[in-house]
Each structure stands twice: as C-alpha cells, then as structure tokens.
Image (cartoon, rainbow, N blue to C red; front, side):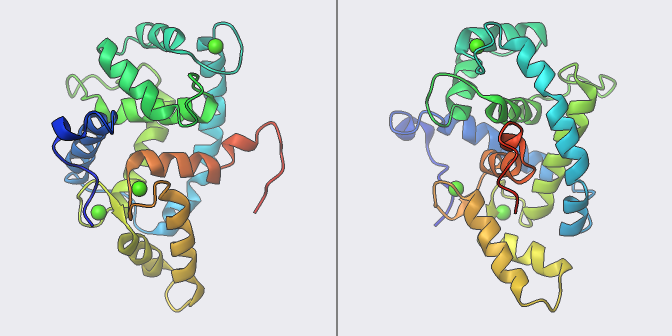
Length: 226
Ligand SMILES: [Ca+2]
Ligand SMILES: [Ca+2]
Ligand SMILES: [Ca+2]
C-alpha cells in the first residue's frame, strides 16, 4: 500500500502525470527536511481566514490571464501566463501541469484549479538564489503558498511526501485530546482529500481539498456552508 510512485517509464502511458507527481513528491520531501513552523492542527485552522482572503485576491490575477474572459484558462493562455510571470518552464512541463490541474478535463483551468496550479509551480521552483526573495513575482501570494506547504509538511510526519490516514488522525488527535469525535473528523477530512481513494494524499489532493474548505468555489453561489 505504498504511494503510486513507481518507475515512470512503465507508468507513463497509463498515468501521464506520474512524472510530475514524482517531481512534486521529491520537492515536498526536500522541503519537509527543513521542518515546519506549524505547532498544531489548530494553528493551521487559525490561518484559514488569511489564506482565504489571499486566495480570493488571486482572482484578479486569474482574470488577467483569462484573456477571452470565458472563465477558464486554456493551454495557450497558460503559456502567456508563464511568460508574463517569468516562470521558466518547458512546453512539456506547462502541459503536464495543465493536465494535472484540469481535473474535469474540460481543457480549461478554472479559478480553483488555477490556484492549485500556481501553488504546485511554487513548490517545484527552486529559489534561484537565497537573495532572490520571490520565485514568481507575486510576493503576498507566495507567502500564502508557503503557509500551505508548511501545513502539508506538518501533516506529513514521516516526511515521505504523502499524508497517510494515520498521519491525519495523529495530527488531529495531538491537538484535540480527549475528544472522541476528533478521530472521526480526521477520517472524514482525510476521505475528502483522498480523491483517488488510494490511501495517501498528495500535495495536489491537499490543495484541491483546501480550496473547497476555505470556500473558493462558493464565491458565486454563496451557499454550501458547513
Ligand atoms: Ca480563457
Ligand atoms: Ca507521510
Ligand atoms: Ca490519493
């Protein structure tokens, strides 16, 4: 029951995003070795409002790159986006990211998918040098991405780049001791995150769950409160 990570050659045909996922897991493991500033699961929850605000502000960026204003970023628009943000990436990398984040395969990246995509870019981009503060030229957004990476690292106790069910339960139990329901909440949260039901949560799955938790998708509808 390990991760889906395997030899990329044999997986390439059936799982086109495996190469990207391998890179993502590797970047996360590296980042995990530096530790986390999160002290508890509650400290993550406390950051929700700030993260929410920051991600909502990202809508302006999204609209700017949605050149034909159809509510989605197509492959061509994404290429322009990378050029304007001066993110260096090969055509293949951009295309892999596109496919990985275009969850409903509509050939368009909607707002929440765009947030996930940018955050993955943030994780994958090495800061060119220590003195270069910004990787993407979006400092306040990048601070939010760093918080999200930090939160994932907090959950990934064994630092293998995935969050397992046990790690999720452990993280939640650490803070809300004595509460019997906390284990159930942890399970529920975990199941929400583990989209492909393979028993582990990748950073991408975590991000998609996160955009739903903070309510990014509900900007228009305004309903669906918990
Ligand atoms: Ca568009
Ligand atoms: Ca783990
Ligand atoms: Ca999974």
